Image 1 (spheres, rainbow, N blue to C red):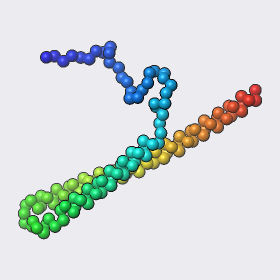
Image 2: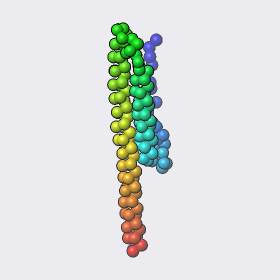
Image 3: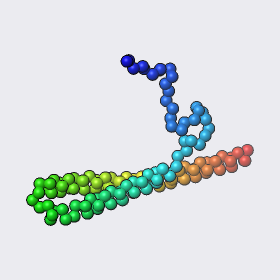
Length: 133
């Protein structure tokens, strides 16, 4: 059975939460909140990875002494090492990401405040000029 091509005339792109063209609404206001929230999530993931690395190590405690000479012990040690490396890399990435996202949120908030103050200052000058006429 042949597949049908979608109608070209019926297709269009609609951005998430976009209102009608020219709509005056607050759906596209930006804030620092998503950045700081994402930073918190990255911190939580980092803590989760920290716990996972610790739990993985504890799960293998004493394995060498009870399984010496077995090929499976060598394989398990190799697997442990690779998983510790992977989880540690994820933990480090989450730590870096958390800091970067937090900084972005702070910078965004400071920039937003600075821009607002600049506009308020300009508005004040315009108001003063208008009163003088």
